[in-house]
Length: 564
Image (cartoon, rainbow, N blue to C red):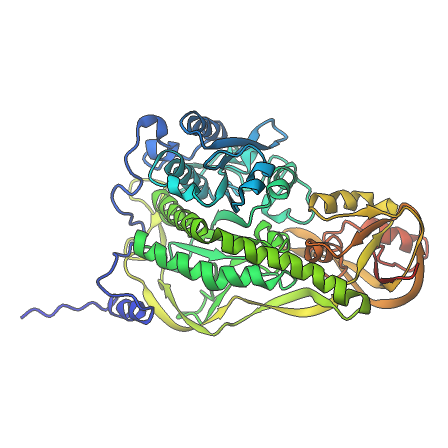
């Protein structure tokens, strides 16, 4: 009798049983594995560049436009949005998918359907999301998935960083050529959600997010070489200042449901977007922080949560083959839009109630000065979880070449199950500030007014002088710190009450009884790490005061009560 031993598979079977999964269920694909023929059979004109090249090339910006044009000429369910024109003259286009077709945000609102926004290639070296979005778009418009437009409108922007996409360099694996991580002016677009410096993100807000008001924002990314075994990992808005209900829905309802469907329908394991303390083995920490998913508003998926809306960010590991990474993105996006097609109205209602709650809290509690929100936060553990990982992921040259692959026998096949790892992804507020009835901003700061309005925050101008009571922030010191490539400002100081202060005609006023109150709070508070103060936008004003011998006073005044 032959005794067969499966030392690597036995703990994995135990792991599946703890999740309620039968051992003889869907095959799970590891490493570079993908099912044969996963992308279907298509006429040549409907194939993507990645498919035509055997997954050796990614799509150029011009080729993306050609593909979108093919979709337009072969489906009646398409409307084109020009999101922006780059500094180099390239157009970033998105397609609005709707059945029946909608030609404007007003038509979308009248339909009563939720709008879902899907974005790829904000970082062009992470190009698999772009390729997967083209395939999902094809499925919906001319393939098997037209039913996914029954209950929703989907906006797909596959190639967001158009200039970076075409700034090609050689890389070790596939695709052989990849773009730049920044746009042509050197901006990392996924760090521009608050300061709004780039043409690209300005266009996204002006032409997509503000007029179409998607209930869900999806952003596709990729990581570097990792030791975890998941095909793709996910995250959502983690800002303690954001309304918790949309975030809780994503975390407790959408994520588990989509994860289970991907395992069943695509044979892939997914989990939260984290990295472990890989210097130790076995690891004991599974943390957002280690994956650079900080509790800060600069990331688009985080800032979007401040609007009382939902967001999903996904990342594939960097070392598998290009086809495997596209397959993982394709699986996630496919199941995500299948979920929103069934649950979009429910998601809209949660966001509508969050809008209403934010406004009501301001109306009923802000005048007293007792309403507070978080300006800083950290991650704590939800508890211990089991994590799928490999002890080794070793790069090596492919024999006879100067190209890199993963050494066979590492980071492939069934992984180890690491038990009892701290799941450090619970966002917890650590410092609060009073939420005012409104902010008063001097006319000299009109440049931040333009940014606030682009954030969809309502702002008025005083027609007559206004006397208010509130508080102002006295700055004891202003220092600059380098934080992952950026020079950030840190204000050290304190709030002090102001019993009566009169502001002149022409002063800008942000009345906080509006759905965007959390976003206005995050941008304008002096102690948020990457609000307007954190990005140094107000430094010239305050240092100018100090140069003339005056105490530095933060120029945005918080009022609680109007006296006249």
